[in-house]
Length: 123
Image 1 (cartoon, one colour):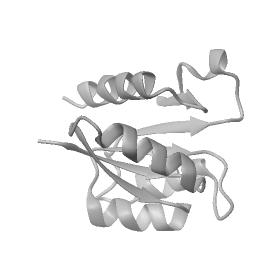
Image 2 (cartoon, rainbow, N blue to C red):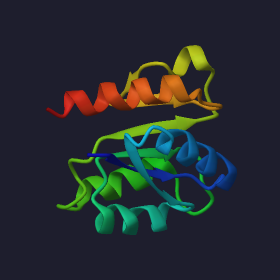
Image 3 (cartoon, rainbow, N blue to C red):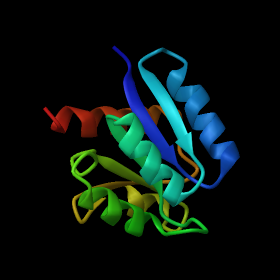
């Protein structure tokens, strides 16, 4: 069964490419939200297996979205991978505060590997 991934990012082109590339081999079903507030609502409604979350967005920063998601019963255990253009690739390939970070632009192969790694830690 396909894993559901929620992408929360204000860059619509990036969301489209991530959706296209992740859904290509039918392993993932991708839901997109283009703002933090929309992402929170979709996370509650869709119960994704994992969230890809941009850090810098106009309505609220990714850290604030993650905080809000952690405060809701139905979303607090959903793993999050932050997508960011604000650090160099070498700096981003690690975890910060227990969260994974991936630098933009993201390569599909690397993204899939990170998703699988995080999902496998969920048991």
